[in-house]
Amino acid sequence: MEPLKVIVTGPVGAGKSTLIRTLSETEVVDTDAVATEAIGKATTTVALDHGTLRLDGQLLHLFGTPGQDRFDFMWEILSKGALGILLMVRADRPKTIPAARNILDFVVSRTPVPHVVGVTHLDQPRVWQPEEIALFLGTPLERVVGFDPRKPEEAARPLARLLELIGTESV
Amino acid sequence: MSKQEQLQQILSELKAALPELKEIIVASPDGLPVAQLAESEIATRLAAMAATAHGLGKRISTTTQLGNLQEIVIRGDQAYFLAYAIGDKGILGFTTPAGSNLGLVRLEAQEYARRLAEVL
Image (cartoon, rainbow over all chains, first blue to last red; front, side, top):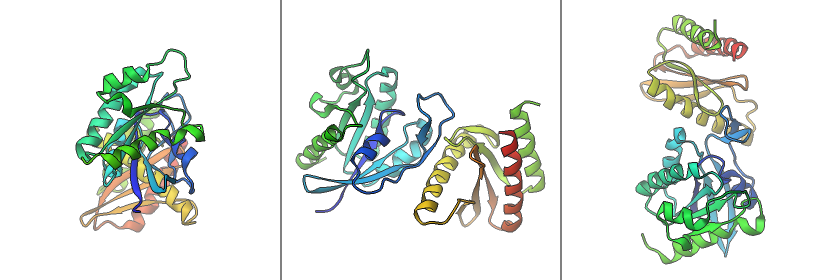
């Protein structure tokens, strides 16, 4: 089976790099640089993250994007040839959800392939529920998956959902 | 003089030393424009791209065991984009025409990157 390219995108701090580090079975290519803005963490991805894993016999290549708008050229470069999109959103930072929608529109308009929304940080106080995020993004609820990208047993969940969609949907 | 003014001053001196340079920027490691001799929209764009190129360049250097990354060279048929680390505090980037004396440009750029590092 051909390897399948998936783009992992979403606003800064959603857990994109974490997800790829948790799941990759090969050495992860990451491009962290010191963050000079207050983004709640010390470093941020400036080019890409890359990792691979095998899921249900299918080899997946995960390409993680930077989250900030100023890196939108990387959203475009990395989405070329992708067969699925995992959009990651932080449930405890509702202010970033419009940014998530903007990224999704940007990527889908150039690469019209199925997407799944992965909702992270649901263990924090005062969060938006997956239902509310689905409504805001206009994404069917069955494509919105709450999960913790730090936990190996959960991290593959949205990708498994995405694989099902890629298998059934011709876009 | 504020830090910003000092950075601008150094960029002006670089431009005076190498008048053929265009679009000179200093970017933070995470791609924000810190100082520039370029139109603001282009500077913002170039700062992000310089950080991306530098981040990826560093990663390629370690993967292929090149040692420490010294320089990023993007060569078009009409001009170059060159970028240099300012210690670990930022990136100096600029464009220069295809006919430029790259040896000289490189020496000057490294010297100015050192001066920028003292201010940043």
